[in-house]
Image (cartoon, rainbow, N blue to C red; front, side):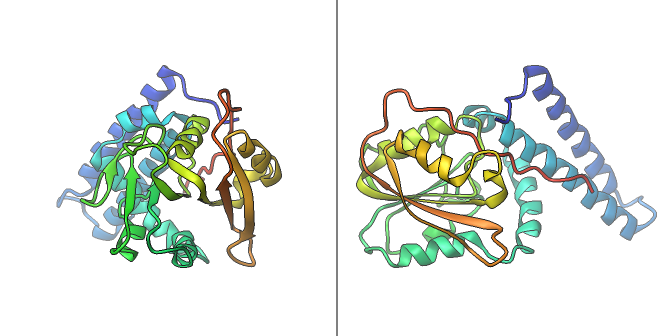
Length: 255
């Protein structure tokens, strides 16, 4: 299990981010003797900030991350994230959209951890799509803690976690997903396959039964098996004391 940072470690991480922010501003100064060198330096610093933010998200609860993330940090994170995602063989959200296209048009969808843009909502403008993330960088995205969603109980037919099961309090997030879902509703999860190295997909599926979910489909998105798609059905309510659930953190190497 990926351990939560201590307050001292969290403070150190914040100092790294603040220090890098100052360096980025300095690199952008017109006095820099080489524009190409300045660009490379700026890219390295932005990537360093991205790594620090990413590590924070994987090592803290949703409540802590929501309090920590500002719009500038969120923008920096997704600036580098977009560059990384462009190199992926498959775009996970496109696979989710194709699955949603096969479901009834009147299904209410909750896209939990949608990122900087409500891509699913944009694809289905005629449907009811609730898009949530820790920061609202788009007018169609609602700022929320995925462990405490501003939705009525049993109000959704589909919930989506597309590369968003990052926090240390996943059991609270899954319990909350069950709360907002109707009986028989679908839960769609896409994750990097390597996150299941310590907890297998089979073990994860067994744990999900305690949250009131049964696995209905499992497949990789491409031959390289980089991403895995899991589809669950809500078969009942979450038990009173669900087990802790953790997946291997997806951390990035230094450049």
